[in-house]
Image (cartoon, rainbow over all chains, first blue to last red; front, side):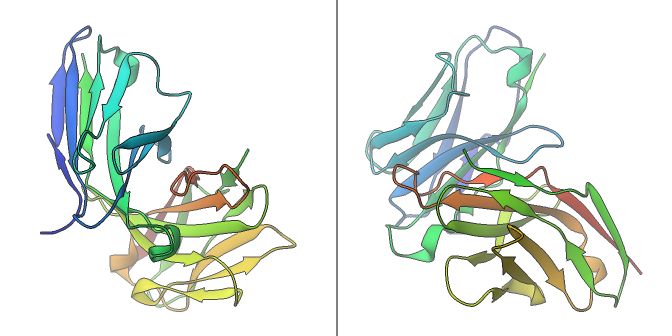
Length: 116
Length: 117
């Protein structure tokens, strides 16, 4: 399968623990995005990378959240000192270079976080 | 700021009947508009998009959407619904004003479409 891959698919953790999610985009896509989706809501934009550069971060992304894309390929999203309000589905998406696909995003199946 | 409204949480339709899922938007500049579908335990899948040109856009699985600038709407339609169309549908918008990130979409809350046999 050459789609966007996310790992783990499910994570249950206790409040205060740190968690890390990984996203592997489609190989030729240089743009990578993280979104968060809570029950009954649409996805909300968190952050965006073009190659290894993090170009935009949402105000939703508190200082407990950090995302990296060190070599412009896979990305990680780390949440430190998790809170129950962090429970959500974390979605990764990628897209090809500008001018191709005209804004269409290719989403992974998501990583579901449950904080107890 | 950009926003999307999907006024119906749920839409129910009989198989074979036409369906409409409504979406209105607010954005600076000309809009880029999208519809995505989400099946249970699956990722969001792209259905169709409006960037420019013809107001009637055709997409995957027989879906189409009509862009109406004066009403700031982008309703999703299908002439004949299938049971397999039952899923969660999201409308999304991105403005083309300067400084807007390429993939920073604003999604609506979603509409659950149920097609009854």
